[in-house]
Amino acid sequence: MALVLVASPHEPLVHHVAGKLEASGTTVLPATSGDEAVEAVRHAHPDAILVDAALHESVQLCSRLRQEPHVGPHTAILVTGGPAPRDARLAALRAGAWDILDQPLDIEELLLKLETFAQRKTLAERTESSSLVDPETGLYNLQGVARHLDQLGALAVRARAALACVVLAPELVDDAARPEVTAFCAQTIRRGVRHSDVSGRVAAAEFAVVAPATGAQGAIRLAQRLAGEMRRRSQEAAGSVPSFRLRAGYDAVGNLAYAPVSARDLLVRARRASLDADVDSRLGWIRPFEG
Image (cartoon, rainbow, N blue to C red):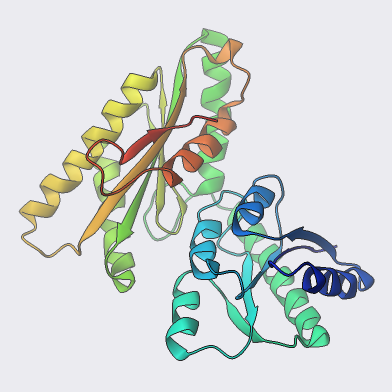
């Protein structure tokens, strides 16, 4: 049974779509604002998301949702609304939408698309789970990082030791440069971490480093060191690396044996902290998880 999040400021529309979808066996999670939608996906793993273009922040919402841990690269995001200008449609697609659907919605067409997207999501996730390495960067993928978090967490609990997770997310001036920037960041991270650290690509443009025996100050120094190395290498490349800015988030515990969170929670919390970072701030580009 598929789980679909429907985000729209119009409650009658949400109830109408929810009724039609639920009649076909689909479970619907309603949200009447962008903030409600983000909060909802933090507690669920939707198979698809419908975003009403009437939400004034619909394009920004697509970007926000793509950064959430429970919205993977295989989760379909569909924007629904009236006929939109070409620039608006392209902006939504660049922000992570898979399709733009005109109103009034053709529920039968929507159901067929949702069924297809859900099947593709299941197949892709099964295929990915069979490998722990991201083929583009050679770093661990999300599953690989999670597997090592479990292992390092178990060691930290037995040793009553610290454990930290840092998430680095480059923001691009030109989205077309993403492959180059991703490769550059991955190579820099691979060279800049300790042998005991575990690094991986956990989203399209998001990297995580798990650092054993590392507290909050060590996590900050790790992020600063990697960011500094990226700047240095970019300057040495004399403009051949596309321009990007970096934001980071981290979470750390001093003694995992007595912490109220699991090792995997550190990754989720560090990713959320990175969303609050300000790439334009000299100090605020890196943020701790603050609950």
